[in-house]
Length: 230
Image (cartoon, rainbow, N blue to C red; front, side, top):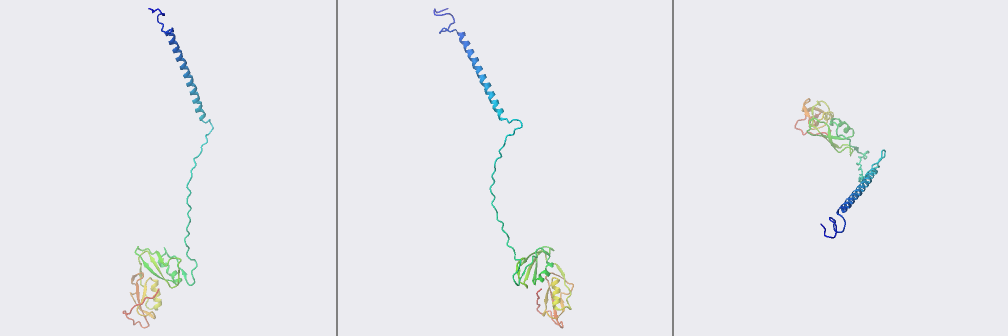
């Protein structure tokens, strides 16, 4: 059936419908081929770039060690302790270092320097070591000074020696060496005629022993005792 202006199935414009479809298919094929080519080229470039980043065998990539900075430490000035005198002033001696020693062993050393002593005992068992002294070690002291010696342990027991028949001076020295304190009943001259407590009694260090001195031994126990200096 016609309308008098053309043949059957021909659209307006004079181009058959089949010819248009063929052109569309051909364009699609060209576009697909173009996209495939672009994709292949892009993949090749990407692969080459990755290969360039990989080091060849035997080559090492240099590494840069990070730099660290440490804060400068402040310098400390050492403080030197003040040294004790090595030479005592004229007429004086240097106090010896007695700390840590047995108190029984230092008496002769103090006596040799013209010093006297007074022992002060603590209560820490039988420890006979010296804990401190007054004056301190290295201090200049004058002969005749009484050194205060502090002992860690308690006063040990001693046996009273027999001093009857000795001179008062000899008796006093013997009692001091035994760790006892002599007390004169009245006078410090003559011969010892009596002592209290008697010989062989047990006392403790620094305890007193009264001695009676005289030519005839007629002194009484009521006399006021005097204590000699060790």
